[in-house]
Image 1 (tube, rainbow, N blue to C red):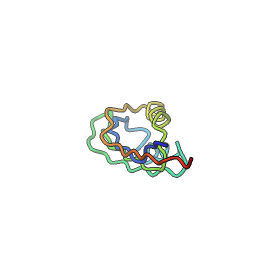
Image 2 (image 1 turned 60 degrees about the vertical axis):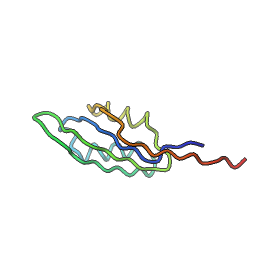
Image 3 (image 1 turned 90 degrees about the horizontal axis):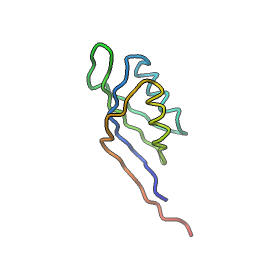
Length: 89
């Protein structure tokens, strides 16, 4: 089974929700998600952030939906770690 284990995203977000609430909401998308959020740049209304998400199986669609629901915009997927675990058949 192929699973996504780590993603590095470039996301433009509004100042609110703040970075703590934004990263916490993304972490709550799945069980045991680790989220690292770094602010790369700021202007009057937005923050450019780098978000690193780690888990044994990341649900990208749900993360993308949460980013949009919080007013963010996914600019790019900068890195992905994918693992192909052979089935036990």
